[in-house]
Length: 135
Image (cartoon, rainbow, N blue to C red; front, side, top):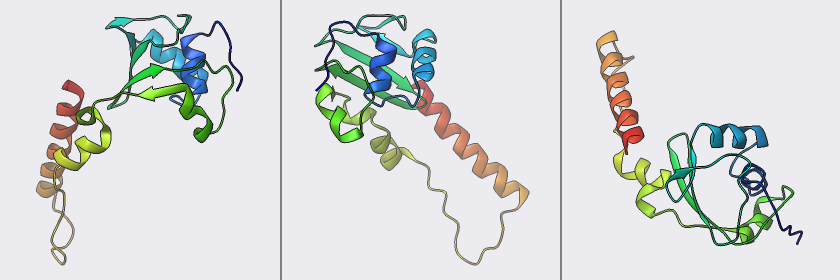
C-alpha cells in the first residue's frame, strides 16, 4: 500500500474517492465545505492520521477520520482502509430521504397533473430541499 509522509487535503479527498476530480476537492476547500474542528481549511492543508474532517457535498454531509495516507487514486474497495466514515446515521443521505422525503405519489388513472397540481408538487419539493440545507 503506497503511503506518504506529507499529503494535501484536496489530493487526499480525491484519492479516497470523496470527490470525482481533484479540482472539485480544491473548490470545496476554498468554498469552506471542508472543515477541521469546525474551522475552514485551505486545499494545501497537510493531512495527519487521526484527524476528523467534516465534508459537505451537496446535501450530503460526511465526517471522515483519516487512518492512512493515500497519494494515488485507487478502486473503491482498496481505499476503505485509508479512512473511517464516522458520520452519524441521522446525517446520512439515505436516512434523511427514507424518513423525511415528501410523498409524491399520484393515484393511477388520475391523468396528468394540472398547473395547480404541478405548483403544489414543486412547492413540496422546494420546502423539503430548503429544510435539508438548513440542517
